[in-house]
Length: 129
Image (tube, rainbow, N blue to C red; front, side, top):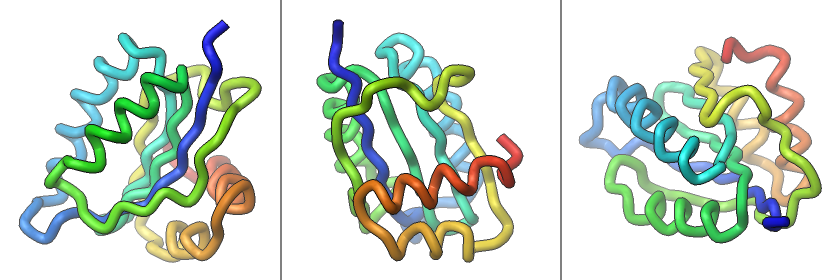
């Protein structure tokens, strides 16, 4: 069995990027994630991203390498990375939630590790995914 791995990170939309690029990112990511067995949720507040990814360890780490060099976002900061016993996202390859209230991401961004993951997961019931 392939080891499941999870990563939670934050970043900001690059200054030269329009917000509509997020839809393009998600459309391409969904197809690739489906092929690679990666699931997760991306939350965007118009300026900041918060993304929680899960899947086979090697695939998630390769995705992170691509994300780290993607010029569409800057100031990437991983707040949690580790082994995962079971998936949290069963129904989508990449869910997208756009939030109006920037406080949602700001609150989660104050934490690291499993506490950050817990705060992020606590947002899910309020999100329109």
